[in-house]
Length: 149
Image (cartoon, rainbow, N blue to C red; front, side):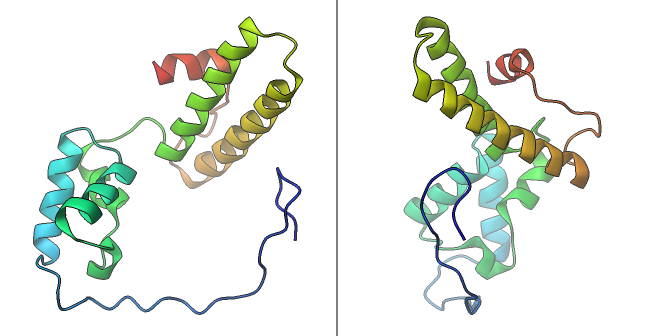
């Protein structure tokens, strides 16, 4: 099956799930990793930044080996208005709007903006359905500009 926003074909078929076995060489246990995650969340790091810091500086390859999820641990500390992936997409859309205000005839940027905004709307429907966003949430450029700044 082809990808939605490109002319490429992905790999299809099922894969065996990776076994989540805790490696014996890890220097941290579950409680220590959870404390590290909460400490980094209080510093204002996003969940992806927390995962990278844990991997690079603390030698924790995967938090799921401890039966943890970074988002679930950080949700206890800081309640975000919108999820991180949606925030990043909205940031890109705002930057594209800014670019198009200066370059009105950039057709590829116009098309890219349409694709980006459709991704944001699709994610918004999903998050409002699952309860991470309000039920009546709608995407608008003005709202995105206010959230991103």
